[in-house]
Each structure stands twice: as structure tokens, then as C-alpha cells.
Length: 272
Ligand code: IPD
Image (cartoon, rainbow, N blue to C red; front, top):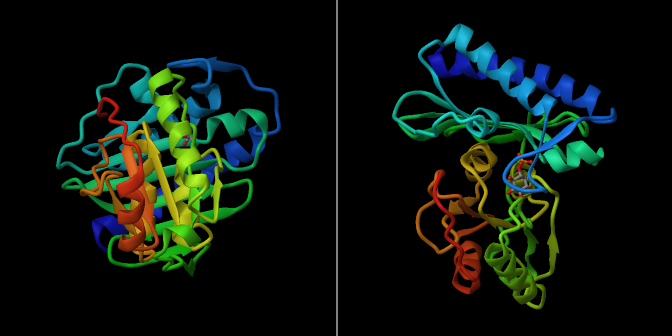
């Protein structure tokens, strides 16, 4: 059994434990704190789930590194090196978790030499476990999944997000893109979790997903899951995907991804 096989077994065990916390706490009253602005939320449970994952991995793999949403919020430096690095969003869709909307998940990826080897996105409320290993396909609850193969933007169902920044310049571009796309696509949907949006593309339930201003922990696992499901992941301006760029566009086909990239109004946030 390779080291990555062992890591995969271990992370599935830990993610299931994390899921039990989210499932238990989602319907309970929570104390909510804010981070960068009034709609960038965090609860004690985001922090506890991240701790559970990091402690669990560290105890087995002390040399592994981490990029975690809540450790970063408490001042830890974000640095992606060639070392095995776990990129963790303990609760993606924290706003949904706070309100009790059941689209919320744990998102974890393992990158080695900056290449994604493992991607796991687990929604414990709806019992959806999306998994991918590099070169081994993508799965929902153990069954293989595949993108829709849609190639035409006018027939596409598009996942978008408002994001958790209320910076007026960013918000203006988000709304301009939604306005321009509404007239040109089948429909626009938003789940409130970047990782789950990407998994909907992997599943073939949506055809494309994009967002400006997300972080590495929101998209690292989803990127691998989409690509292993036969889709593509690029920069929203058409270049290669960069997990630290805070920009993502994934789609069921390169044709579709490139069509969308050509019409999007671009936004370049500060990198992770
Ligand atoms: C957020 C969600 C949201 C997206 C934001 C993310 P969080 O992650 O994925 O859908 O629009 O950009 O920050 O804060 O719930 O982990």
C-alpha cells in the first residue's frame, strides 16, 4: 500500500468524524463570529473541525503541512511548498451551516509537489461523499461520476456565488457577470458552497462553475474531483488553473470553459 493510499484511508476516517460534528451541530443554536466582513462567518465548530483534522493527520504524519481556513484566519502564514500539504476547509458553506441550510461540507485536498493527489468533499447532512484520487476517477458515495460533456454556453447550467466579500468593486463585477450571463445560459444556480458547486459540475448536474475571490481551501479538492470526473479546471481568463490565485472556473468541457472565460468581466483579488 502506498503512502498516499494510507493517507486516503486516514482522511476518510477523519472526514467522517468531522461530518458527525457538523450533522449534530447544524440544527443547534450557534455563537457566530465575523472575520473579514459582516457576511464572512465563523463558528466554534469550524475551528473544532479544523483542529480535529489537523491533529489527526499530524499525529500520523508529523512532517505534513497544512493550509487551513481557520488557522489562516488566526494568523498562520499561507505557504504552498513541494512538501505534502493538506488544504482544508473544515466547513465550506459556513453561512448555510449557521442558518441550517443543508448545503454545507468538509473539503480536504492533499497536494504533493503542488499536485493534487486526493480530493474529498463531504456533505454529511445530505450524505454526499465526493472523492477523487489522481488518475483514478471521481466518485459519489463510491459510485463513479462523470461531467455532463455540455459544450455550449447557451445550454449550460451555471453555478455562481456572491462570495463573502462586500467590497463594492468586487460586488459590482459579480452582479455584472450574473446579469450578462442570465440572458445567455440555461440557468444560474448558487448553493452557497464553492466546493459543492464544483462537485455539481463533477456530477453532471451543472455544467460550469466559476468564482473570483475564493481561497485555496474552497477549491483544492473540487478541482481534482472535477478533473477526475472528466471535466476541466482553468483560470477564469482562460489560462492554467492556479490554486493560490483566488480564481476558479471549472466546466464539463474545455470548449465551454473557454467560451465563458471570453465573456466574463475579470476580477483579480490579492493572491493567497
Ligand atoms: C465560502 C463559500 C461560498 C463562497 C465563498 C467562500 P466558507 O466558504 O464557499 O460559497 O462564495 O467565496 O469563502 O467561508 O463558507 O468556508
